[in-house]
Amino acid sequence: MSKTHPGGLLAAFTQVDAAAGAIRELKEMGYKDFTVYTPVPNHEIADAVGHKVSSVRLWTLIGGLTGMSLGFLMSIWMSLDYPLIVGGKPIPSWMPYVVISFELTILLGALATIAGLIVHSVRDTKPGAFDGRFTDDMIGIFVPCPVERRPAVEQLLQSSGAAEVRVET
Amino acid sequence: MATAISPESASLQDTQPTYSEITRDIAATLGSPSRGYYVLLGLVLTVLAAGVIALLYQVRWGIGVAGYTPPVMWGVYITTFVFWVGIAHCGTLISAILYLFRSAWRTAVYRTAEAMTVFAVMTAGLFPLIHLGRIWYAYWLFPYPNQRQLWVNFKSPLVWDVFAVSTYFVVSTLFLIVGLIPDIAAVRDKVTGWRKKLYTITSLGWRGSDQQWRHYSRAYLYLAALATPLVLSVHSVVSWDFAMSIVPGWHATIFAPYFVAGAIYSGVAMVITLMVPLRKVFRMERYITVWHFENLAKLLLLTGMIVGYAYVVEFFIAWYSGNPFERASFWNRAFGDYWWATWTMLICNGFMPLLLWFPKIRRSIPALFVMSLFVNLGMWFERFVIIVVSLSYEYEPYAMGHYTPSWVEWSILAGSFAWFFMWFLLFAKNFPTVSITEVKEIIPMPRRRAHP
Image (cartoon, rainbow over all chains, first blue to last red; front, side, top):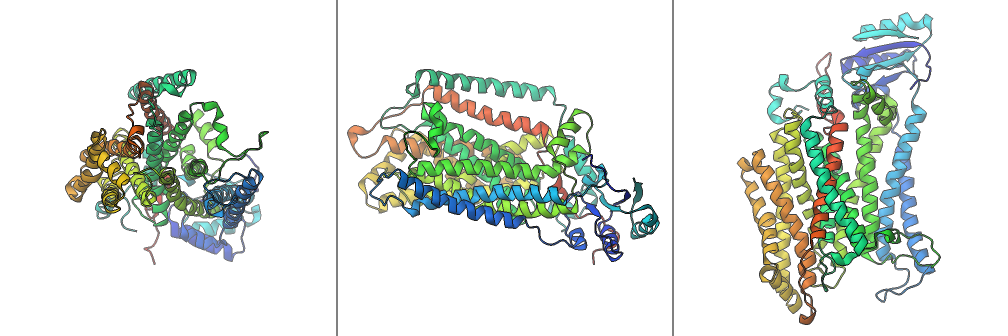
C-alpha cells in the first residue's frame, strides 16, 4: 500500500509478552490508533489490544438466512410457475427443497463471510509503516505520533523490550 | 502447547524450527523448478492431451462412442465423477472439521489436502458434463429464465447434486484462498523480482495487523463451520443420486453415511499418495513427520472399518430382507460377470485396512504409500460395482446386459488423472503446499519471562 501515513515510530519485538506489555502501556498513555503486526494470530496480543469480537459473524448470519429463504422461495415459486406432477407429490413439496435451501444457506453464508472479511479489513486498515519481518518472525507496533511526543513513546517501547525502534516519517 | 511439530520433538527443543526457519524452508519450495518437474509436467500434459482428443472425438461422433449398452447407461463417467468427488472430501475434513476440533497435526498437511479438494472437485465437475453427451447444453442443469418457460425439477436428486457440487466447489475454493493469504504475504516479504510483484497482488495487501487478524480469524472460523456440514451433505446428495432410484443394489438408507465414509477413506489415501513424494522432493521431513502419517493412517483405518461394515450390512440386508431382486443383485455382485470388480473392492477396502491395526505398518511410509494406491484402486471399483453392476442386473432377465468401457472412456479417465495432477503440480511450485502460518501457530513465540 502506497498510501501516505502520518509519521511515527515503528518498533519490532521478538518476544510476545514484551510486545503485549508495550501495547498495554501504550493504551494507558492514551494511544489508541497504533497498529500491531503479528506473523500469526496471537491471543495474548489480541487480549492486550482488546478489540471487540469481529462483526464478520453478522455477515455470515445474514448471508446464511438469505440463502435459506431464497432456496425455499426459488424452488417453490419455480415449481408453481411450471407445475409438473412428479412422483405423485404436491407441486411445491418443501421436503425435497430442504436440500436446495441448505446448499444455498452454505453458499450465501460463505460468500457473505468473505464479503464481510473484505469490507471490514479494508475499512479498519490504517495507513502505517510496515516491515517485511512482521510476516516472518517479529511483532511490529506502529505508533503514529507527532515529533514532540516521540521521545516519551520511544522510551516506553525500548523499556518494554523492543529489539529495535525506528522513526518513520 | 508442548507438542509443537510432533511428540518426539517435544523433548528436543532445539529440533523445533523457529519462525524464520519455517518461512525460509517453505518459501524455498517455490519457484525455480528442476528438469524433473518439467519432465513430469510434460508427461502429465501428454496424457491430458490424449483425454482431450478422446473427448473431442466423442463430441464429434456422439455419446455412442462410449461403451454404453442398455440397460447400463451410467458407466465409467459417473463412476469417475463419484470417485473424484469422494477424493475431495478428505481435504475439507482435514481443513475444516479437524480445525474445529483444534487438532494440532492437521496444520502441516492441511494445505495439500485443501488444494487436493479444489482440484478434485474441478476434475469431478467435468464428468457430468462429459456424460451429457451434448456438452454444449450443460447450462440446462441450472434454473435460468428461458423462452420455453421451463424450470428444473427440484424434486430430482440430480438437481440437488448440481447445487451441492457447485456450492462445494465455490466454498472450498474460497476456503483455500483465504487460508493462503497470510502465507502469500509471508512469501512476498521474502522473495524479489517478478515473484514479489505476483505475490504483492495476490496477497491482497495483507500485513497481519491486529484488525486484519481479528476479522480474518472470525471469518476463517465461520467458513470452517459452514464447510463442515457442507462436506457431509455433498456426498450424501451424491449417494441419493442412486439411493432415490428403485434399483436393486442402490435403494438403501445406508447409502449417505456409507458414501461419506468411503469418500473420506479414498481422500485420505489420495492425501498420502500426494504427500509422500511431495515431502521427499521438497525436503519437508522436518515438518511432515511419521507422526502425521500415523494420524492419517488412523483416519484411514477408522473410515476403512466403516466402509467394511457398510459392505457387510449391504450383503446381510440383501439376504435378510427376503427381497428376491435384492438377493439376486448381490449374488450377482459377488459371483456374477463382474466378480473380479467386486472382489477387488472387497479386498482393497474391506480387508486391507485391517493391516493398519499394526503400529509398524501405520508408521511405515513406504507401506502406507503402497496401501494408498490400492485404496484408490479399490474405491474406484467400489463405485464401478455400485453403478455398473447394479444397473446391468435389475429385474427382468431379458433386460439384463453387459457393459464394457470403450477406449474413449479409458482415455478420458486417464486424462482426468492428468488434469488433476497438472493443477497440483502447478500449485506446488507457485504456492506454499505447507501452511507457513499454521505451522508457526502451534509453536509458541519466544518470551521474555516464563509463561505466568
